[in-house]
Image 1 (cartoon, rainbow, N blue to C red):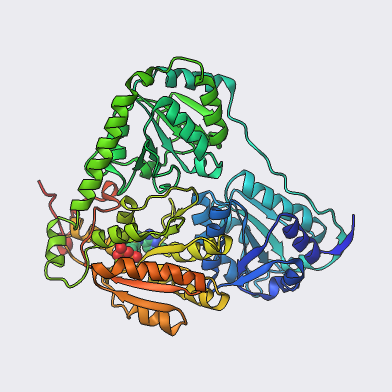
Image 2 (image 1 turned 90 degrees about the horizontal axis):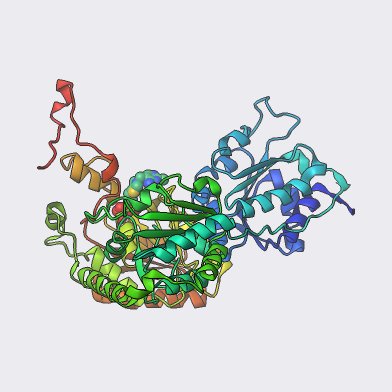
Length: 586
Ligand SMILES: Cc1ncc(C[n+]2csc(CCOP(=O)(O)OP(=O)(O)O)c2C)c(N)n1
Ligand SMILES: [Mg+2]
């Protein structure tokens, strides 16, 4: 075992795990290791805010399937990682969050930049390591990388800053690369029996299909069964949109075709999805989840099996391997659904055409408030604007989406033919996710067009990372939906609080001008006819290293709300507040 310093052991372990890029903000706590990055061939990407660095590491890992790594100064630099770590946790991203801590010799004395860093992250990481002594540096760094990958989520590597110093004989580990099998024979046999007997099988393709690189296997199984395939919520890239069996995404602002088809299923194969509760809520007035269907769920994490939905068979296995094993079992046996393949293909085609036609005609929102604010507005209807972006979308684009009303509506208009193309703020649902996430994705895949969809409220939270794009020459395109409001929350005040607006209206600068003053390109678009061409040019400018902010001016109309499921009409009891009561519409 070679003799080296702890900083060298840390950096050599990063090298052994193939780390090429690390996101963060410089700090004295780890400067001794940082100093070695160039000689180790590691690029350090300084960001505007540590939250941005965390989201970048997340986006980077989501497109590449490799680790994303972020690092910061002990104390405030590390607490700035909290939101991005929670987001990565719910996106199942293998991010290694390196958290240098105050010195072990003074911990507890209330010195500078001191806080206990392990409890803060205990519920938003899959694994936490604490380098209690410098000779454990290589071992615990390696384990953090292994655990982030095998547990599919953030691992925290907490290092008291004094432990970057000192020397020891270190063994530098090799990545452990654990692979998972398809699941038990028993569960696969049972599932194959159900699928063989199914009259109307439907596959839900989840994130696990992407993570396991299992799209082709999922497609082969779907073809064997002539089963419609729907994407799980916010995983529009889990099955190719140009495949005849693809039906679109479930969930909030998803595809009516997908919902109508899955509602007819007698057997559902949930492949690589935890069936998160928000992702299967009724939408468009359709309570589509087929309550009497037999559900087969495949998840690499056995704790997800049957957690949210009742299931008939749970398969603890890799989505790709399970799909392959099921195909193998069905290969030489009678598949009942084959007899009705033609009928089902026609049904899929008809439902998809109907949904496209509906989207074409659905140029604006039709509720009273939306009609009121959009009539006479010089600006674009969000839906029409989104349709134009869809038409102009470059072929192998990567698109990140934020949390907001228009970003959510975009779910109906985002289709992909290749996996690892859509990076939505997943279940953690934090505003400010999309822009830094796409910057990270662009670092990992510089040859692909990188696009972020962001509402103007969320843009206010995240636009500082334009500095990173410009300083570090990471060219992306941000489409900012300028509607002068925190629209998604305003929608709740429209629907439940008698249009009493509080904290939802935004006075904004011209975001194009802000972009230009920060050294990026900035364009304001207020005509539908200009959307496609501007978008085209902006994506093209990425090839020349230029970042563009397209500020699209849209009306204040609002699509269906996020959380109708969780809100109640106010019924106040004190006289002082009674005037705020709202009666539910009949
Ligand atoms: C960090 C964070 N703060 C607050 C919220 C609550 N929230 C959800 S959507 C939303 C409004 C988003 O507004 P904007 O980004 O302008 O998009 P729009 O809804 O107008 O399209 C807010 C404040 C959140 N999800 N995340
Ligand atoms: Mg807005």
